[in-house]
Image 1 (cartoon, rainbow, N blue to C red):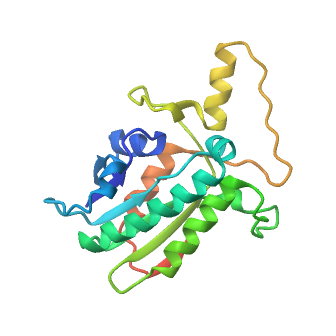
Image 2 (cartoon, rainbow, N blue to C red):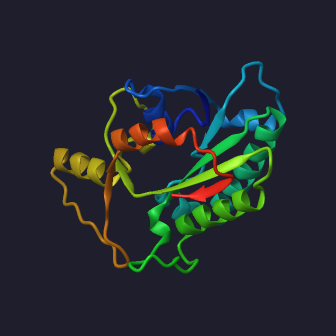
Length: 203
C-alpha cells in the first residue's frame, strides 16, 4: 500500500517513514504542496494526517494554530478528492478525554485543535473518502535519523533529555492518567489499520 504523509520535518511522520519493519510504503511531501492545487503523477491509497502544532506550540501561538489546523485539514480533503485518494487516517489524541472518558471542555488549545479537526473530517465523510480517527496516547521512541524539532517532545524522551543535562523532570496532569505508547507499537498497528473498510470510525 502506498501511503502519503504531508510534512517532512515532523517527529511522527519521520518515525513512520524510517521504520524498517512496516509493510507499507511511505512518501513524505512538504505541506506547501497543499497550496499548489497539484495533481500527483503517482497514485496513493491513503493519507495519514499528522499536520498541526504540538501542545507546546499550541499554547504559544493559540489562535494561529486553530486557523492553521482547520486550513490544513480542509486542504487535505480537497487534495484527496482531486487525486482520488479514498482513505484518510487522522492521528488524534487521548488528551481530549477526562478520567471518565468524557470530552474535555474546550479551554486547552491543543485539545481544541484535535476536536476541531475531528469535526471537520466527520462532516466531510463521503462515498469517495473513508475516514479513520486514531486517538492515541503519549508517544515515545527516539530515532537517530530524525532531525525534527519534535524529537524530544514526548514524555519519555523529555526524561532522557533532562537526565543527560542533570535537570529536574516533573510530570503534571490533573485530569488523566498518563499512558505511554511506543512508536513501534503504533506503526505495527498501522500495518493492519490501513486496510480499514468502514466509512467513518474512531479508535
